[in-house]
Length: 187
Image 1 (cartoon, helix red, strand yellow):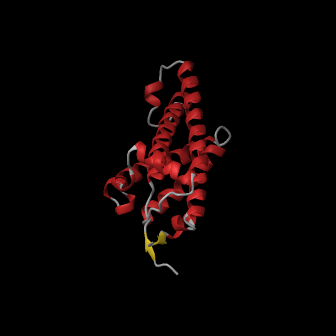
Image 2: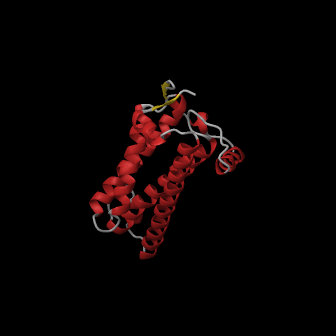
Image 3: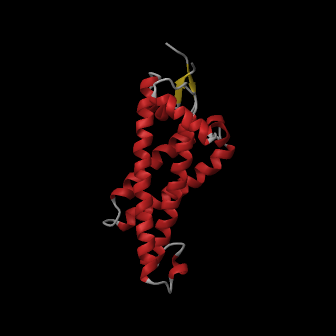
């Protein structure tokens, strides 16, 4: 049996699963359970802030410098994956790194538009004072933008899951398990 090494530190694993849970909760509670939806959004926003910080000071494979590459490298890796010839990476591969960056941006924009919408519609939250005298047009624009970003993020999650499945099959490695226990094969 191949030796295993720790790749994903506790901060990365906790962030990942908090992200999964809070996004699902926020997505499913959209209009029906506003307090829960808002709470999930705030926790998600806080998790993103922690992840951004950890991307600069965290462990080796948590750092953005370890996995952010050029778009060309990411698309080349994607082509290699589609032909089942992608090289294995201990940390994130170039396509996975690009996906993480895009998902973080999409999630951050979803949170910001959600907080703004909460301020405009409910006159609550940290952005409420910005919308004291705003028109209903702002509410509509923010509502549509927030919903579009949430759905775009859901699409990104689906693509991410397909990538995880493909890479797991190509390299005969359970990537979900590695995000639970933090370990991967060393070779």
